[in-house]
Length: 150
Image 1 (cartoon, rainbow, N blue to C red):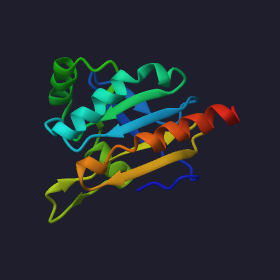
Image 2: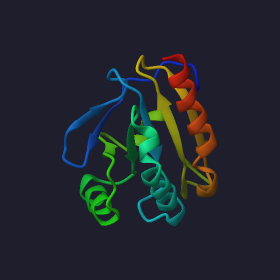
Image 3: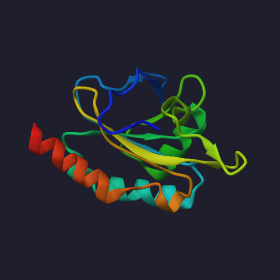
C-alpha cells in the first residue's frame, strides 16, 4: 500500500468509457477502492461519498472497482454514481497501488488514497474487512489539511 507523504506512482487507469485516467494530473484526487461492485458495505461507502459530494468541490473523486469496464459501467449506471468509475488497464486498479487479496486470496482489500495537486499522497488507508475500508474521518481531515496548505 502507498504511504502518506510519498510521491504517487505513475498509474494509468481506464474509465468506463475507455478513456485513460492518470493520477496526479495537476489537481487533487481521492480514489475509493471498492472490494467489489456487489459488496453491500462498499456500496454504502460509495453512497456516503455521493451524499457528501459538495465537500469535494476541489477534489476529483474516483471510484475504483476490480471489474472489467462493462461490469463497472453497468454498476455505475444502476447506482447512479456521479463520479468517474475506473478499472485497471492491466490487472485491477487495486494491484497498481498494492491492495492485494488476503485470507487465502478470498478477500480483496479496499481503501482510499488522496493525492494532492503536486502528486504527493496525503491520505492512504487500506483494510481487508470491508467495514474498515472507508476512513471517513481520515479523508475529511486530509482534505481539510489540503485546503489549509493551499
